[in-house]
Image (tube, rainbow, N blue to C red; front, side, top):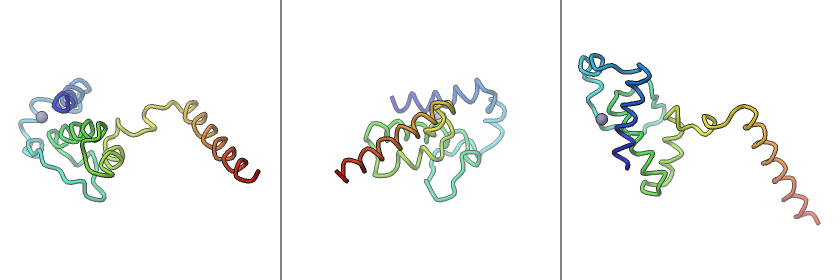
Length: 112
Ligand SMILES: [Zn+2]
């Protein structure tokens, strides 16, 4: 399944026009698979195979098959994997209010 995520990242980029066959073949940057999660790493600086490799690693991390902290690191790098990507602004507000209410409730229980 992780390999499927890798290939789907390519499909996504071809479908969106972010990557073309000519663009891939004419730029050696796209042929490198290895990528280290160094501080300051940016999605836009990565080649196509590196981006697909991170999509693959995200799937592994999301299924408990990666080291500590890798899932959250990948979520900060991969634009479509960011948590706020999945929330409409209205939904994000609900989450924030619910989290606040839970915090307040917990504090209230501690006091009583
Ligand atoms: Zn690939």
